[in-house]
Amino acid sequence: MLLHSALLALGATLAAAVQPLEVQGQYFVNPKTGNRFQIVGVAYQPGGSAGYDKKAGRDPLSDPDICLRDAALLQIMGVNTIRVYNVNPDVNHDKCASIFNAAGMYMVLDVNSPLVGDSLTSYNPWESYYAAYLNRTFAVVEAFKNYPNTLAFFSGNEVINDEKTGATVPPYMRAVTRDIKNYIKKHSTRPIPVGYSAADVRSILFDTYNYFQCSLKGDDGDMSKGDIFALNSYSWCGESDFKKASYDQLVSGFTGNSVPIFFSEFGCNEVSPRVFTEVGTIYGSQMDTVFSGGVVYEYTQEKNNYGLVDMRDDGSATLMKDFLSLKAQYAKLNFTEIQGKKAPSTAAPAPPVCDSKLITTDGFNSNFTIPVLPPNATEIIENGVSPKPVGKLVEIKDWKVKFTVKNPDGTVISNLAVKPLADDGVNAPGTNTDSGTQAGTGTSTSSSPSASASKDAAARPGAVVLPAVAMGALAVLAAL
Image (cartoon, rainbow, N blue to C red; front, top):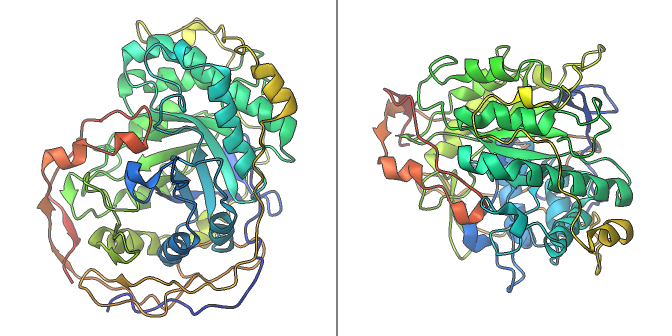
């Protein structure tokens, strides 16, 4: 049986579904319930690099009809978080943010864009660290800080990707983190965590983590210390396992973490269609005390062949087999148990004091002298950006999807709509029922190596291509 329908529109409402989360030690926590929150996420950048067009005033959260279509599909899948790489602070995002909020989904937002001057560069980072760049990052904060479903900001993505960039970038990346945190402290009514999305390059991964998570003051009062840490990891391919995919090394290396850690990207495509067997492990007992979930790469199909949905220029879309496979893996999870765990009453591990002994790789920066603010940046932090974008939840009058969406076999999904959740609701599999998804099994096929080696770098500033590993035999959801 295929995906037949979602619930019909439920009328106009100003829904404030999600509860703003807090970072408590190494976990995301719902302050109302005291429960831990695990990220069940998807990377959301419709159109890839072309989905962000500053001159045209277009970004992934600028078209409410597209957002409504995608929120309905992600809601059926069970997703509770989207990661958005490139947003334009000059564009109004109220409707899209309200749609994802009502659907019970948080947003993790990168503050950078692929345009020159909109991100910290991997090489000669001091040349890109100036007031105009910071003004742009602060404007992103202003545009999204008032939405209750804004979960976190990434100050950078894979800007450090080898030993050479590890020699120069870390102090500047930590400075940007400090600056964003100081801006949030001055201008936001609530704390919003800021952190870094790292490349899973094992020779420098744990040095990168140690550099960003240590404290210059020996406590949590250091504003340059990251609030969260994430990594883009593709080491689990096909029917792998905890050790073969080297997840055991990640758990061992991050054990004792003082901040939430999660996968900001995962989903190796060396074997296609993907089966996402890592999902059960990521949310299982081997990892959930150290990791707080993860984000699957990626929602829309691009040339790199990581998509869950094939989107057309006219707004129509077709689900791919990977969509059904990932949905089936999420459906196996006990979300009541996963999201119902209480945060420990004991104090979280204290961050280590910054010291050159934390760095083990020759050539990686071990100097914790953080650059001072560039000229004129102090005034921007003190007075705020100008003009100042303001985001707020708005009323959505119709929750029904306007575009045609098809199953992998070409049959049309009827009555597709977002189901607005009650206040403080978070999405999970089964929230938006009537999906009727069932798939058979079949034989896997291997995609070409080049397909998995060319993620959309233009849409992900500072991206680095990672070597794929652990390719093997695979039983997958097959053609319907």
